[in-house]
Amino acid sequence: MTVRGGARPIITVQQHILEHQRHFPHATGEFSWLLSGITLATKIIASHVQRAGLLDVLGDTGQVNVQGEVVQKLDELANQTIHRCLGYRGNVGIVVSEEDDEPRVIHEAGEKGRYIVLFDPLDGSSNIDVNVSIGTIFSILRVREEINRQDVMSQVLQPGVQQLAAGYVVYGSSVVMTYTTGMGVHMFTLDPSIGAYVLTREYVTMPPKGKTYSINEAYRATFPQGIQDFLDWAKSDDAGGYSLRYVGSLVADFHRTLLKGGVFLYPPTKKDQKGKLRLLYEANPMAMLAEQAGGAASDGTGRVLEKKPSALHERTPLILGSKGEVEKVLLFWKP
Ligand code: AHG
Ligand code: MN
Ligand code: MN
Image (cartoon, rainbow, N blue to C red):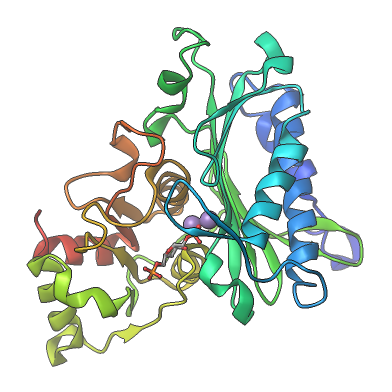
Protein backbone atom coordinates (compact mmCIF):
# COMPACT_ATOMS: atom_id res chain seq x y z
CA MET A 1 0.00 0.00 0.00
CA THR A 2 1.52 3.41 -0.86
CA VAL A 3 0.12 6.82 -0.17
CA ARG A 4 0.17 9.87 -2.48
CA GLY A 5 3.67 10.75 -3.61
CA GLY A 6 4.83 7.19 -3.01
CA ALA A 7 5.82 7.92 0.60
CA ARG A 8 5.65 4.79 2.67
CA PRO A 9 2.91 4.91 5.35
CA ILE A 10 4.05 4.71 8.97
CA ILE A 11 2.12 1.85 10.59
CA THR A 12 2.77 1.26 14.27
CA VAL A 13 2.30 -2.12 15.92
CA GLN A 14 -0.74 -0.78 17.82
CA GLN A 15 -2.38 0.29 14.56
CA HIS A 16 -1.51 -3.04 12.93
CA ILE A 17 -2.96 -5.03 15.82
CA LEU A 18 -6.18 -2.98 15.75
CA GLU A 19 -6.51 -3.52 12.00
CA HIS A 20 -5.82 -7.21 12.37
CA GLN A 21 -8.04 -7.82 15.29
CA ARG A 22 -11.02 -6.57 13.26
CA HIS A 23 -10.82 -9.98 11.57
CA PHE A 24 -10.60 -11.71 14.94
CA PRO A 25 -13.81 -13.60 15.69
CA HIS A 26 -13.94 -12.57 19.34
CA ALA A 27 -11.60 -9.64 19.17
CA THR A 28 -12.08 -6.70 21.40
CA GLY A 29 -9.83 -3.70 21.97
CA GLU A 30 -8.50 -5.48 25.02
CA PHE A 31 -6.32 -7.75 22.89
CA SER A 32 -4.40 -4.81 21.44
CA TRP A 33 -4.32 -3.30 24.94
CA LEU A 34 -2.62 -6.49 26.19
CA LEU A 35 -0.10 -6.55 23.33
CA SER A 36 0.72 -2.90 23.94
CA GLY A 37 1.76 -3.90 27.47
CA ILE A 38 4.28 -6.27 25.94
CA THR A 39 5.62 -3.69 23.48
CA LEU A 40 6.02 -1.18 26.33
CA ALA A 41 7.99 -3.72 28.39
CA THR A 42 10.31 -4.57 25.50
CA LYS A 43 11.04 -0.88 24.84
CA ILE A 44 12.16 -0.53 28.46
CA ILE A 45 14.26 -3.70 28.22
CA ALA A 46 15.77 -2.50 24.91
CA SER A 47 16.83 0.78 26.52
CA HIS A 48 18.67 -1.13 29.26
CA VAL A 49 20.22 -3.63 26.84
CA GLN A 50 21.63 -0.77 24.77
CA ARG A 51 23.15 0.89 27.84
CA ALA A 52 24.29 -2.37 29.46
CA GLY A 53 27.89 -1.24 29.88
CA LEU A 54 26.79 2.11 31.36
CA LEU A 55 24.15 0.81 33.75
CA ASP A 56 24.78 -1.78 36.42
CA VAL A 57 22.93 -4.51 34.49
CA LEU A 58 25.85 -6.71 33.46
CA GLY A 59 26.92 -9.79 35.29
CA ASP A 60 24.87 -12.06 37.47
CA THR A 61 22.73 -11.65 40.56
CA GLY A 62 24.37 -14.53 42.39
CA GLN A 63 21.02 -16.33 42.41
CA VAL A 64 20.08 -19.58 40.64
CA ASN A 65 16.61 -19.91 39.07
CA VAL A 66 14.22 -22.83 38.85
CA GLN A 67 16.06 -23.93 35.71
CA GLY A 68 19.23 -24.31 37.78
CA GLU A 69 20.81 -21.46 35.82
CA VAL A 70 22.63 -18.45 37.28
CA VAL A 71 20.31 -15.43 36.96
CA GLN A 72 21.88 -12.50 35.12
CA LYS A 73 20.97 -9.00 36.30
CA LEU A 74 19.33 -8.35 32.94
CA ASP A 75 17.27 -11.56 33.30
CA GLU A 76 15.86 -10.21 36.54
CA LEU A 77 15.35 -6.68 35.23
CA ALA A 78 13.54 -7.98 32.14
CA ASN A 79 11.39 -10.26 34.27
CA GLN A 80 10.36 -7.50 36.66
CA THR A 81 9.73 -5.08 33.79
CA ILE A 82 7.34 -7.46 32.03
CA HIS A 83 5.52 -8.22 35.30
CA ARG A 84 5.15 -4.48 36.01
CA CYS A 85 3.86 -3.75 32.49
CA LEU A 86 1.46 -6.70 32.32
CA GLY A 87 0.35 -6.98 35.91
CA TYR A 88 -1.89 -3.90 35.75
CA ARG A 89 -3.31 -4.30 32.26
CA GLY A 90 -6.55 -5.45 33.82
CA ASN A 91 -7.11 -8.27 31.35
CA VAL A 92 -4.19 -10.56 32.18
CA GLY A 93 -5.19 -13.23 34.65
CA ILE A 94 -2.05 -15.39 34.86
CA VAL A 95 1.61 -14.72 34.02
CA VAL A 96 4.19 -17.48 33.50
CA SER A 97 7.89 -16.66 33.30
CA GLU A 98 11.00 -18.73 32.78
CA GLU A 99 12.39 -16.90 35.82
CA ASP A 100 9.51 -17.73 38.18
CA ASP A 101 9.12 -21.10 39.88
CA GLU A 102 5.30 -20.94 39.69
CA PRO A 103 2.65 -19.06 37.63
CA ARG A 104 1.64 -15.67 39.07
CA VAL A 105 -2.12 -15.21 39.37
CA ILE A 106 -3.20 -11.57 39.05
CA HIS A 107 -6.10 -11.61 41.51
CA GLU A 108 -6.92 -7.91 40.93
CA ALA A 109 -7.99 -8.76 37.36
CA GLY A 110 -10.71 -11.14 38.58
CA GLU A 111 -13.05 -12.38 35.82
CA LYS A 112 -11.62 -9.73 33.49
CA GLY A 113 -8.32 -11.56 33.47
CA ARG A 114 -9.10 -13.41 30.25
CA TYR A 115 -5.52 -13.89 29.06
CA ILE A 116 -2.50 -15.89 30.11
CA VAL A 117 0.90 -14.50 29.10
CA LEU A 118 3.93 -16.78 29.11
CA PHE A 119 7.39 -15.43 28.47
CA ASP A 120 11.10 -15.87 28.41
CA PRO A 121 12.05 -12.38 29.57
CA LEU A 122 15.64 -12.52 28.39
CA ASP A 123 16.64 -15.22 25.92
CA GLY A 124 20.31 -15.86 25.28
CA SER A 125 21.54 -14.75 28.72
CA SER A 126 24.99 -16.19 28.10
CA ASN A 127 25.42 -13.52 25.40
CA ILE A 128 24.47 -10.48 27.50
CA ASP A 129 27.97 -9.49 28.63
CA VAL A 130 29.56 -9.92 25.20
CA ASN A 131 27.20 -7.68 23.23
CA VAL A 132 25.71 -10.45 21.11
CA SER A 133 22.02 -10.34 20.14
CA ILE A 134 19.56 -11.44 22.84
CA GLY A 135 15.79 -11.34 22.98
CA THR A 136 12.42 -11.65 24.69
CA ILE A 137 9.90 -14.35 23.70
CA PHE A 138 6.15 -14.28 24.49
CA SER A 139 3.12 -16.50 24.07
CA ILE A 140 -0.55 -15.66 24.75
CA LEU A 141 -3.26 -18.14 25.72
CA ARG A 142 -6.88 -17.56 26.65
CA VAL A 143 -8.16 -18.51 30.12
CA ARG A 144 -10.32 -21.55 29.43
CA GLU A 145 -13.90 -20.94 30.55
CA GLU A 146 -14.51 -24.67 30.86
CA ILE A 147 -11.65 -25.08 33.35
CA ASN A 148 -11.89 -23.86 36.94
CA ARG A 149 -9.97 -20.58 37.10
CA GLN A 150 -8.44 -21.69 40.38
CA ASP A 151 -6.96 -24.74 38.66
CA VAL A 152 -4.01 -22.63 37.49
CA MET A 153 -1.82 -25.44 36.20
CA SER A 154 -4.61 -26.86 34.02
CA GLN A 155 -5.12 -23.34 32.68
CA VAL A 156 -1.48 -22.82 31.69
CA LEU A 157 -0.61 -26.36 30.51
CA GLN A 158 -2.38 -25.91 27.15
CA PRO A 159 -0.89 -27.26 23.89
CA GLY A 160 0.70 -24.72 21.55
CA VAL A 161 -2.16 -24.96 19.05
CA GLN A 162 -4.23 -23.03 21.59
CA GLN A 163 -1.98 -19.95 21.41
CA LEU A 164 -3.84 -16.76 20.44
CA ALA A 165 -0.60 -14.98 19.62
CA ALA A 166 3.15 -15.43 19.85
CA GLY A 167 6.20 -13.35 19.15
CA TYR A 168 9.66 -12.22 20.05
CA VAL A 169 11.78 -9.11 20.19
CA VAL A 170 15.42 -9.40 19.12
CA TYR A 171 17.73 -6.77 20.66
CA GLY A 172 20.34 -6.65 17.91
CA SER A 173 21.81 -4.04 15.58
CA SER A 174 18.21 -2.87 15.49
CA VAL A 175 15.35 -3.85 17.80
CA VAL A 176 12.86 -5.94 15.83
CA MET A 177 9.51 -7.26 17.06
CA THR A 178 8.04 -10.22 15.17
CA TYR A 179 4.54 -11.41 16.04
CA THR A 180 1.62 -13.45 14.78
CA THR A 181 -2.02 -13.68 15.86
CA GLY A 182 -2.56 -16.62 13.54
CA MET A 183 -2.92 -14.41 10.47
CA GLY A 184 0.61 -14.34 9.13
CA VAL A 185 3.91 -13.15 10.57
CA HIS A 186 4.70 -9.44 10.73
CA MET A 187 7.86 -7.52 11.67
CA PHE A 188 8.32 -4.11 13.22
CA THR A 189 11.49 -2.14 13.84
CA LEU A 190 11.76 0.09 16.88
CA ASP A 191 12.39 3.66 15.73
CA PRO A 192 14.29 5.11 18.70
CA SER A 193 13.70 8.65 17.45
CA ILE A 194 9.94 8.28 18.04
CA GLY A 195 9.96 5.34 20.50
CA ALA A 196 7.53 3.36 18.35
CA TYR A 197 7.65 0.00 16.61
CA VAL A 198 7.03 0.67 12.90
CA LEU A 199 5.89 -2.01 10.42
CA THR A 200 8.80 -3.10 8.23
CA ARG A 201 7.70 -6.47 6.86
CA GLU A 202 4.21 -7.95 6.53
CA TYR A 203 3.24 -11.60 5.89
CA VAL A 204 6.83 -12.83 6.22
CA THR A 205 7.33 -16.29 4.72
CA MET A 206 10.23 -18.60 5.46
CA PRO A 207 12.17 -19.86 2.40
CA PRO A 208 11.15 -23.52 1.86
CA LYS A 209 14.80 -24.57 1.83
CA GLY A 210 18.03 -23.13 3.18
CA LYS A 211 21.66 -24.19 3.25
CA THR A 212 22.28 -23.29 6.88
CA TYR A 213 22.04 -25.53 9.90
CA SER A 214 22.21 -24.12 13.41
CA ILE A 215 23.25 -26.40 16.29
CA ASN A 216 25.76 -26.49 19.15
CA GLU A 217 28.02 -29.18 17.74
CA ALA A 218 30.06 -29.25 20.97
CA TYR A 219 27.44 -31.75 22.19
CA ARG A 220 27.68 -33.89 19.05
CA ALA A 221 28.98 -36.99 20.84
CA THR A 222 25.81 -37.19 22.94
CA PHE A 223 23.26 -36.36 20.20
CA PRO A 224 21.02 -39.24 19.04
CA GLN A 225 22.73 -41.23 16.26
CA GLY A 226 20.19 -39.98 13.67
CA ILE A 227 21.19 -36.37 14.38
CA GLN A 228 24.87 -37.28 14.06
CA ASP A 229 24.04 -38.97 10.73
CA PHE A 230 22.25 -35.80 9.54
CA LEU A 231 25.29 -33.67 10.48
CA ASP A 232 27.63 -36.05 8.60
CA TRP A 233 25.35 -35.85 5.54
CA ALA A 234 25.15 -32.04 5.72
CA LYS A 235 28.96 -31.91 5.56
CA SER A 236 29.16 -34.38 2.65
CA ASP A 237 29.53 -33.41 -1.03
CA ASP A 238 26.09 -34.68 -2.03
CA ALA A 239 24.42 -32.29 0.46
CA GLY A 240 25.41 -29.37 -1.74
CA GLY A 241 27.29 -27.17 0.72
CA TYR A 242 25.65 -26.29 4.07
CA SER A 243 27.11 -23.69 6.37
CA LEU A 244 26.85 -23.64 10.15
CA ARG A 245 25.58 -20.54 11.95
CA TYR A 246 25.03 -20.62 15.73
CA VAL A 247 24.59 -17.53 17.90
CA GLY A 248 23.53 -19.28 21.09
CA SER A 249 20.43 -17.09 21.43
CA LEU A 250 17.33 -18.91 20.16
CA VAL A 251 15.74 -15.61 19.17
CA ALA A 252 18.73 -14.60 16.99
CA ASP A 253 19.14 -18.08 15.46
CA PHE A 254 15.42 -18.27 14.70
CA HIS A 255 15.24 -14.71 13.31
CA ARG A 256 17.97 -15.58 10.79
CA THR A 257 16.27 -18.88 9.93
CA LEU A 258 12.91 -17.13 9.44
CA LEU A 259 14.44 -14.63 7.00
CA LYS A 260 17.04 -16.78 5.20
CA GLY A 261 15.74 -20.33 5.60
CA GLY A 262 17.61 -23.31 7.04
CA VAL A 263 17.11 -25.38 10.16
CA PHE A 264 17.75 -24.85 13.90
CA LEU A 265 18.26 -27.94 16.01
CA TYR A 266 18.42 -28.46 19.76
CA PRO A 267 18.22 -32.27 20.10
CA PRO A 268 18.39 -34.33 23.29
CA THR A 269 21.87 -34.44 24.83
CA LYS A 270 23.37 -36.36 27.75
CA LYS A 271 22.99 -33.18 29.87
CA ASP A 272 19.45 -32.41 28.66
CA GLN A 273 17.80 -35.73 27.84
CA LYS A 274 14.65 -33.93 26.59
CA GLY A 275 16.55 -31.14 24.89
CA LYS A 276 17.31 -27.82 26.61
CA LEU A 277 14.61 -25.50 25.28
CA ARG A 278 11.41 -24.96 27.23
CA LEU A 279 8.14 -25.95 25.59
CA LEU A 280 5.75 -23.31 26.90
CA TYR A 281 7.68 -20.08 26.34
CA GLU A 282 10.45 -20.92 23.85
CA ALA A 283 9.47 -23.81 21.57
CA ASN A 284 5.71 -23.15 21.29
CA PRO A 285 5.89 -19.45 20.36
CA MET A 286 8.68 -20.10 17.84
CA ALA A 287 6.74 -23.07 16.46
CA MET A 288 3.62 -20.92 15.91
CA LEU A 289 5.70 -18.29 14.10
CA ALA A 290 7.49 -20.94 12.01
CA GLU A 291 4.24 -22.62 10.89
CA GLN A 292 2.55 -19.25 10.24
CA ALA A 293 5.51 -18.40 7.98
CA GLY A 294 5.17 -21.70 6.08
CA GLY A 295 7.92 -23.49 8.02
CA ALA A 296 7.79 -26.40 10.47
CA ALA A 297 8.59 -27.25 14.11
CA SER A 298 9.02 -30.84 15.29
CA ASP A 299 10.18 -32.53 18.47
CA GLY A 300 11.32 -35.52 16.42
CA THR A 301 8.07 -37.44 16.81
CA GLY A 302 5.47 -34.83 15.80
CA ARG A 303 4.41 -31.16 15.70
CA VAL A 304 5.67 -29.23 18.70
CA LEU A 305 2.34 -27.35 18.79
CA GLU A 306 0.39 -30.54 19.44
CA LYS A 307 2.38 -31.54 22.52
CA LYS A 308 0.30 -31.63 25.70
CA PRO A 309 2.49 -30.02 28.36
CA SER A 310 2.73 -31.85 31.67
CA ALA A 311 4.96 -29.44 33.58
CA LEU A 312 5.45 -25.68 33.62
CA HIS A 313 9.16 -25.63 32.71
CA GLU A 314 9.09 -28.80 30.65
CA ARG A 315 11.79 -29.04 28.01
CA THR A 316 11.50 -30.43 24.48
CA PRO A 317 13.74 -31.40 21.60
CA LEU A 318 13.33 -28.80 18.84
CA ILE A 319 13.87 -29.07 15.06
CA LEU A 320 12.70 -25.72 13.69
CA GLY A 321 12.89 -24.01 10.29
CA SER A 322 12.23 -24.43 6.58
CA LYS A 323 9.76 -27.22 5.94
CA GLY A 324 12.10 -28.95 3.48
CA GLU A 325 15.02 -28.77 5.90
CA VAL A 326 13.07 -30.04 8.92
CA GLU A 327 11.89 -32.96 6.77
CA LYS A 328 15.50 -33.75 5.82
CA VAL A 329 16.52 -33.94 9.49
CA LEU A 330 13.56 -36.24 10.23
CA LEU A 331 14.66 -38.57 7.41
CA PHE A 332 17.77 -39.28 9.47
CA TRP A 333 16.34 -39.00 13.02
CA LYS A 334 13.37 -41.14 13.95
CA PRO A 335 13.34 -41.22 17.80
P1 AHG B 1 17.95 -18.53 28.09
O1 AHG B 1 19.04 -17.53 28.04
O2 AHG B 1 16.58 -17.93 28.12
O3 AHG B 1 18.17 -19.57 29.16
O4 AHG B 1 17.97 -19.33 26.71
C1 AHG B 1 19.17 -19.82 26.24
C2 AHG B 1 18.86 -20.93 25.27
C3 AHG B 1 18.56 -20.44 23.86
O5 AHG B 1 18.48 -19.06 23.75
C4 AHG B 1 19.73 -20.96 23.04
O6 AHG B 1 19.28 -21.45 21.82
C5 AHG B 1 20.29 -22.06 23.90
O7 AHG B 1 20.00 -21.75 25.25
C6 AHG B 1 21.77 -22.17 23.76
O8 AHG B 1 22.14 -23.29 24.54
P2 AHG B 1 23.68 -23.80 24.51
O9 AHG B 1 24.47 -22.71 25.16
O10 AHG B 1 23.64 -25.08 25.27
O11 AHG B 1 24.04 -24.00 23.06
MN1 MN C 1 15.60 -18.70 26.41
MN1 MN D 1 15.77 -16.61 29.47
